[in-house]
Length: 345
Ligand SMILES: *Cc1c(COP(=O)(O)O)cnc(C)c1O
Image (cartoon, rainbow, N blue to C red):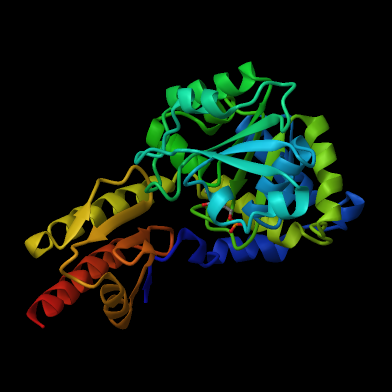
């Protein structure tokens, strides 16, 4: 199987499993798991923030950022294609009474600062706009790396209106690589930043929320309320620490393979696939309307290549540490066979 559905499907490596087996652990709810503490310190340092909190998922990290900043009836501005809006079961609204107001992500995932200015409300208004959430890389917009200038523009408008800025940096290291900067520089544009160990970094579980110590201390209490306090979590934190130490540099391999995958798919006969060069490890493309996109995916799966999609004709493939060069070649060859057989039918 060549599993391109997401970078979340990667399996822990042998070295990672060994790090997990050796992990020194304690009861993290009591604050004495040394591996979790090391992970939180290393994460905060890497991202250039005072403190970090290890949580079970990126969804919980984003939810905590929203809950810690917004009260019930407050408003948070999010991108129209954001993960927070589409893939987190609107926990912020359901659990926190927070109103989510969306601003357009353009097809490159960017948010126009003027649009942010047009939706943020004056400090005395009801509801108050207390948070603006950005996302980098922007998942649904093709894993786009959002340039620093674009982020800065939106962040400045937010601050000018008295709102804080949260960055959903699930794949911040992919963004840093594509933008030729470091994660801390991107993170410096936001007050709180979340990122995932379970995506391209290849750990089995976990994310962090990073930010000022006082904010993270309050988020720790909220994590407890949500049932996210974990006991000997060092076992999984060890995998995340291993990922942070050994799997950041190798993300360039995923980007190169995504570029090669896109090239290969673009060269299929008859313009079957309309595709842009990916910025990072996520490849999105449109299947020509003459071909049934759902059938394309089913046939590809029967050939041993798994992918996902956000619409019948819109397909997503993601490279990760479980996909090697042969996997990329195999996926392109399988797509070619499927397209040729569908055209012949
Ligand atoms: C994956 C992802 C998250 C968090 O997802 P979990 O599955 O809850 O860990 C958040 N934001 C973006 C952009 C993501 O891609």
